[in-house]
Amino acid sequence: MAQGNKGWGAWILIGITIAYMGLLILAPISVLVIGAFEDGIASLWRSISSKVFSQALLLSLQIAFVVVLCQTIFGTMIAWVMVRQNFRGKSLLNGLIDIPFAVSPVVVGYMLLLLFGRNGFLFPVLERLGIQVAFAVPGMFLATLFVCLPFMVREMVPVIETLDRDQEYAAKTLGASGWTIFTRIIFPQMSSALIYGMTLTLARALGEFGAVLVIGGGVQGRTETTTLFIFRALEERRFIEAYSAAIVLGSFSVVIVTLADALKRRKERKSQSKANFSLK
Image (cartoon, rainbow, N blue to C red; front, side):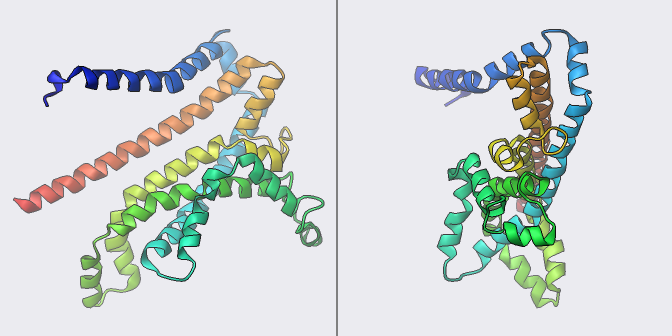
């Protein structure tokens, strides 16, 4: 059916979709922007240029960067094993990957407290080693790492399943090493999914709240991330600071996801162009 000849049912479905997305996404964003600029741009700038906010944002970025690095390596490794290897317990492992989707982040933080807190199972060992996990940055890193686990794996698994094995076999027959096969044949086919998985992981890590609040405690200047800064500002009724911080954090995530999506579409268009050229 041509685009201009849609039936009334199609237009109703489109209208419901737009209204639903507007209610869930556009309306909150609009209110947030209006609130941030309520006292003018100077007030917003003072909020986001304060030392306390800068420390919180820097900590968020540091934790997110390390989490993305770890998930890029180990998440890709897990996805590769799930697709290319068969072993007993594989279905159980596949189910465990999705547990962070089902478990509340607050529960994650509490579980880490049970392990690493003062009365935790591992606390005596950590105390002897002089390592503090609970109410410190390492605990916040572990919490964020846990909640971000599925994003890289679930993005990479479908791509690894569709890799062209014929090219791998041909390269191996010609004497190419495993590293050469990976860097020249496998990685180029996975690159767009890898970038998108890193992007989703980064956005999720920047937005984590419940788990880092419980395990980190939200100590200003030490374990306060941007999300915890927003929470404290709202509790203290400093709404302009909360709105401003939320805009900065949200802008980071939106820009990152938009760029990754654009790169992914560009990669897909290039692949499609090559496929069309080869058919001619």
